Length: 288
Image 1: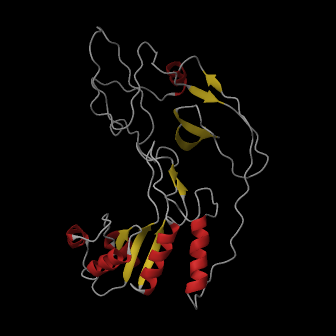
Image 2 (image 1 turned 90 degrees about the vertical axis):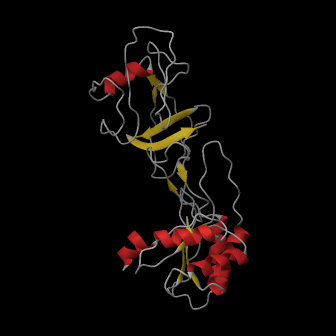
Image 3 (image 1 turned 60 degrees about the vertical axis):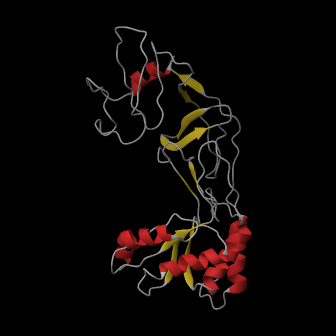
């Protein structure tokens, strides 16, 4: 039953307020015999009641479950956090527990990281979502508030919250000098790139069996004065003419010695847009 619930039973509703679109989503997305659930973010008590009232039409008398309670939302590059309202989050938890008799999965309870290229084109590398436990493991004010609410409002809890732990230690390694590898980006790539594939037309990532990252396309132009058109780029494309670009991209390498297994942070201020690798591990994209 658990596998059916995980694979077939969750019907997500992106609406902030209960309306007919939720009914349609549950009707077309719900699988008979599985548990229908609901997803939403902080809202007023009346809207909470409305969401669970609609859910009751589709869950076959099953329990009320908020499978994702969005305490906050993802952040796009260049965007500003909308601001986490801890008071509203706690009020909603209290209402769902006592009034709606609902089970709640807090999303996110522990923040994460979009390592490598997994963040896509628009979302920042952090996958924190205003989590109660921050991306690096720090305890946040939201965690303290949730822990306090459980201790003070729920009696008979078989596993009450433990004492709040200290935040993980952090080490500052100071400034790391980075040196450019090679004379320019294209000459550097020629030393590390995989074998080339010849094609009359540019091939997609799928066609060259390359899931994520970068692909270098090159060709020799027999005439100038034309406009370059690349309508199918879905992320970012960089244009070089005679191995030169309007900016100064490159591969930069530096070293430092870690004296302890503790957290540290990379300050990308002034570096623009790029990708960070540490000991060959693709930490993720930065843009500052």
